[in-house]
Length: 200
Length: 396
Image (tube, rainbow over all chains, first blue to last red; front, side, top):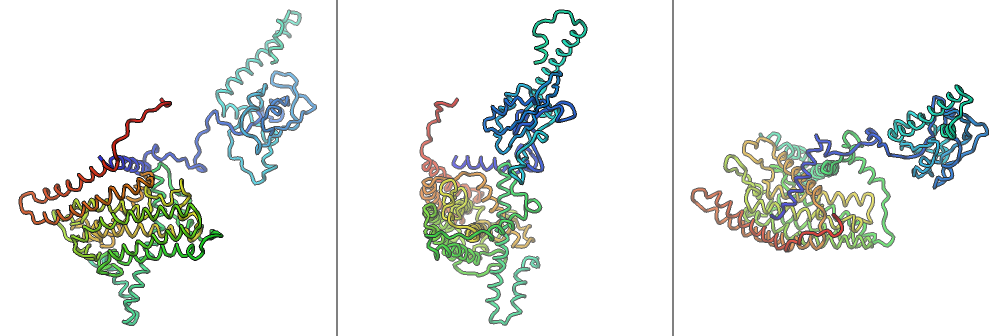
């Protein structure tokens, strides 16, 4: 029958038109500034620095090893090491950054910094409303702006965070057990590598 | 009953009565034109927003909804934007023609409204060859389109204008031919007479609109298809197919001249829609006798709005045709079918004298078959043999 396809198409658009008033499947627009979609776990925008505890600067996991700075493809990370060391979560003294800047106008959101970090100190954020009036100073984020608590990381990347935090708990427990064993029997032979493993 | 019905007519005569008697016909004409410009200018603004919102809804999205409540002030924002845009004339353009083209497009289309009867006693001019005047005036838009394309000195403009000319001339033929049965059976070229011929009622108070006869229904569909092409609307919007030739003959226009073209295009659509209502849908008559109490201009407006919605609906549904498909569709399908429709109208007229039981359904079926069978065969011939089922070499 000539024109059957046209009628079929017209019926579909008519169903769209009527359905848009009651069926959310037929009106899929999310009105962005007022409504927002829930974030997706694997989404990533710019990096942020994870800290433990309440004090952001004291609890910063970063050890200023500069691996991320060297790996960053567009070279948007800038680190200066501090001369004062601080204890990390297992009590070992580590370096800390004096300056940790990320130029987010240069960052290309590849996430390589987060992949290479051996201390789980830099992770990818999901903020995206980053526009600013000043395109230089306002887009160069310092470590105080970059530092976000561990809870925030857990909220964004639940799966990854539970892995990492499980491993960290394990390490902490082992270190404490080793330290306790050492304190209890200082002369007992310690299994080679146990302490080292605990500090990893 | 006629209080509300004739309110505009009385208002016009009352306003005219303040002028000396010799000047009164002129004043009445100016008032009628002012009314038409006001109503259809507003209609244009409303249609742009309604069209965009409806298209949106049909494509699973909201239309414009940012300016004012529900986006209703969008036309005003658009108008302001159009007015304050820079008016660029290309360096090598033919300045005079480039300037004149939007005017040549818009002015005749306003004139075409003069003969349309918008309600009882509500046509600006009652010409005894109204429909002839309408088509004569309407074909001036082809000149304007070619002026625009030629004067812009731009290959896209020229290609768009050539396409527009080919399309408009091809579709002018079925557009006019599909109206001929109406003229034949009404026996007049005056639009008021044609409306009057559809003003009686039959079985159970159903109106005798032309669209309720087989030839009228076919004629209405042919007319609407040809009118869509005449007003360059999707799916016949090749002259300004933006994916192929930027904006066709509008490429070198900006600011208010562009707005005038846009206005002209919509006014052309309104004019042919008004003509379709007049010729096939009984003009300002109510569909049923018991609905005659509503004002005549209200019925005209309802039918007009319904047809405009149909045009928007078609635009939301159908993709653009290719140029050869477009021309084949006109010359090999619409033109023969509208000629056959003439014959069907003649048969309908002859069989009006039938006198036997169930003569009305028999007459209807005979005429419907006479138009439906050519429709089927011509469609088959146009389409050609079906292609073999598609074989996918690499996809699953």
